[in-house]
Length: 281
Image (tube, rainbow, N blue to C red; front, top):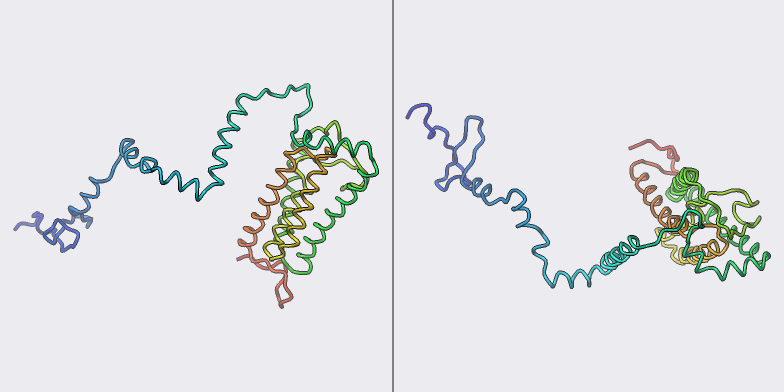
């Protein structure tokens, strides 16, 4: 048997060609008939991908199961198709006309009442300012007394982003806007329309309350937030999109604040040597 004989390169293997051996090349990389079979059985190219596509395996039971176990995504799928049809057939609002806001249409009755009763408008504005104060007090209490940073970080991120976006796109004040010196910010000062910091701050506080099992307080804040939304639409203090994005912004920045906390070692405790400026991980 000479030095170039392939028999010299045989090594024992349980994954070989059936006789207990597999051939090994000069670099030590072996391959047996098991590997070759796997390579031949693997589908390649577009045709192979289509033959193994997941949707080809779907059956009637899968559709029923999706409707039964995942009703929310199915609902959004149907509404997606509906609003695609609405969007592509909708008559655009002319540039010479005021924006069309469905929230303004729904709360037209409230706008009429507040227009005819300035004292009621001022009272509701004052109560809304109290609610904003409640949000602020809760977030500061959590930070200064309980030593938890997440709600404060979320509010910091949220208001900073609101300032950037509000300045970048300055929407026109609605024609039927009803201002009040008792509304926050107090004194009939200018403010950004997009997006609602009132709503976002309430969402941030409510989500923290739920994390701490303060469910009754959280439901109270949610209820007051709904009343706040109705009032802001009635006074034309915000467009509907400002309020909807405010809800999403509160949830988004609460999540980002939680991720930030996980990426840093931050504690505000009374333990010796532990401060809010704790070292990084």
